[in-house]
Image 1 (spheres, rainbow, N blue to C red):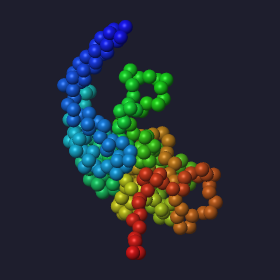
Image 2 (cartoon, one colour):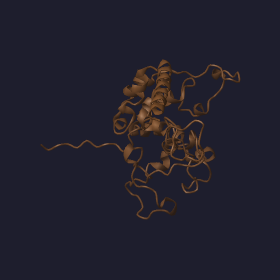
Image 3 (cartoon, rainbow, N blue to C red):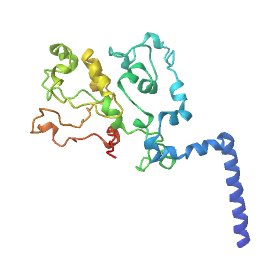
Length: 264
């Protein structure tokens, strides 16, 4: 019996060796070292730079939009949904380039790879074929949709804002100027580490599409984001019914870190 198990062990080891050898031909050893690199896991991912991410994922930035769609439509003759606002200039761009390196992104945002991607743990990779009963797996490189919702939610309920209709149809009644009201309402805004608040405020004065672009103009979701109600000068002491339960601080991950000055 012992000899039987010895033979069985040898067969299993041989099969494993064959499998590993075949796998290494497809993926060099460096792939596995990169896959399990500490930068993909907490706490390293929390301080990872774009340079670190793009040292392996540069193709994300180099990738270009198709000149012709699978249906035969030329990109130069079609208008993408994100091009419908006056703030977007130039030709169509890929998803990641629009968030990282286009002129509008560089001007108004301070997006990083880690703003959306919080690492990639192969242990949590979704199984193939999918197991619909297992709720503990997540897709590799998955992004929490709540992050996207912050800039791609629906336009807030216009009734609670005192508008007669959606901004698309009532904007002219307010001189197409969001700051006509928001100069004195919710004035403590955009104070998160993935935005450039000063540039947003300046650009918003020049073009309301800067504001509307992230507050319904580039909507992905049917719901609006429940933004934290940071206090502002002149804020009413009583919380309106629709705002009860709202957070009063941004997610700690997105808060701007204040550098303490030492007295020593």
